[in-house]
Image (cartoon, rainbow, N blue to C red; front, side, top):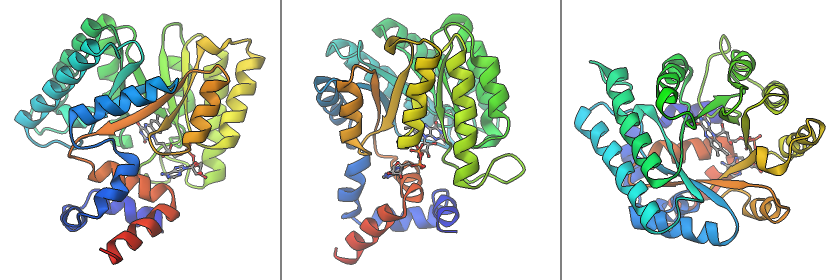
Length: 308
Ligand code: FDA
């Protein structure tokens, strides 16, 4: 119930205006977001890299309804990738992109515009010597995102995609994408989805996550295990061992601000541990999804609002 309400609120302009009005929310937001500006994103990247972790940066934004804003987001990524190259961080930091932030939802030629903007970002990543992973949004975008990814991969074969274990279709998508050179970030899924397309309860989602892991770990691609769940992390390690994968053939990923000690433990044990690091002014939707994942986060948030 609470999760559904928060996920519905994450797309409500009214709630957004209310939440963004409270300056103290920024202290809470800071736990999950590196800051408003590019230089804050770069500084946080440097700190993470110095601690032995890799990074994937997200210039926050989604559901763009304006072509100029979509082009502006692509430009922001180009600046980010130039900064990563100039600071020598590109070897350890890539970027994650939401296609809805670069035009996928525009009423006219949305997919075409998103493809072209994503192509610019991929080219900037190639010039910087790093990679891009396409985030996955709600299920209405899955086919479109995978089809844009397929086109981009013709020129940028290292392009990664995200699959969401809660979607009933995902085990089959994993099979399609478990080929050599294919980078797949497998996560549980963060959106409110109908039962017709997605498993609903935690137990069913966890079982689906394990099925997806089995396919990806047995395949020829590069699985990116995106979860904070101790059981999923343990099972991923066991599956890697059973499939005789060495530590360079897959990686663990977690969100900035969540289980940092576990991030360090995995990195210190010799694994590749990548942190998903968001920065930028459009933090609202991302932040609300983090609240929805864990009721305790909502308690901290409400307490901060009450004591402002
Ligand atoms: P689960 O939700 O079962 O949590 C397991 C444990 O992790 C909890 O008990 C708690 O200790 C901790 N935890 C989890 N979330 C927390 C939070 N918000 N605050 C504090 N503690 C928390 N989703 C999507 O739909 N599309 C996408 O593109 C991505 N991309 C993505 C990239 C990366 C690198 C990660 C790690 C995750 C995503 N996600 C995502 C989000 C993902 O789908 C999922 O919602 C969250 O990772 C939470 O699921 P867990 O697997 O962590 O398990």
